[in-house]
Length: 441
Image (cartoon, rainbow, N blue to C red; front, top):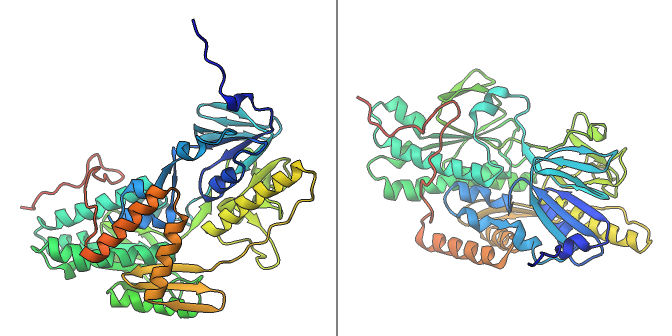
């Protein structure tokens, strides 16, 4: 009779670091501690890392879900001092240094929260029920199925009002996600709809981008914002600026000026908010909904508890209201905290965090992109190539980089989105089945 020895990970005598969330910050932090004298446990309710900047390409059928997802175990598995548990964290008990999850409790010496963000509806409960979101792979697949189903359904509709509503796609929020999604849908109208749905006029498809600000890409320079607006207009995307969505249902939305838009599809990309956990409420900034952290990422009022990325509100001279909730901040904070924990083991002084802004970029369509780098702002083909190179380089795993490059190359040469399969029909909230493709009598 044989017995199974305990895994080497369980025998490690090092301090236990529990990391909640495997996004950009969490994964960067863990990779920096690979083979170091810490025992690291990653907890995440998904079993994969999601490269969120390319979610819109999964949603618009340019990339498959596996192109931007990477299994945690493929990353964590080779690390002798790290392990992964697929678990949803329910509560933190800081006085006992424990994390409660749906698969049991885990003790920690150091707790690192890298939970990322979720969609912010700014208290608009109606739109939270009606609008589609784009924060996960499953949500991206829902959007993909939805617009493909709407195309098929439009072919059998008889009433003009129903047809127009079916082909009206509304995006709320003209930040990078909204702008990129609008541009991608516009290219689908120009290529896929025109070439493969010849029974109806592609001009019937309407793409509306709504934002409460006076310009698109408000966080970018005015030059880049103007370039992005010009590209969107070239692609015949309708811009509704200085307007807010007040309410809506499955058939229409209402704006703050009293006007209404008939649509079956509303995608909300207007903002994000940090994901927080019960048990650490005293460390939250009440208005921002993010944990107040010092320049070493430690949450105010708690020992050995840290927050990274979107959920961390860290003030420094250049960012008195905290850093932007973007991937580059998360990556730098994850790297910095790992560096400081290693310095702590060597009894060295900790180094305060300083964010290095490497710029911002957004792509609107084929050879249409904008880039801000310090005092430089430019657009066009050069910006488009730079956007592609940066995003491919940031993907996790060689296979994902190769697949994405191949798909982009094929799409550029063929003018076709490569993946247009309705493998999981989207069922709208409040309905038992997907909208049927039945001609009206």
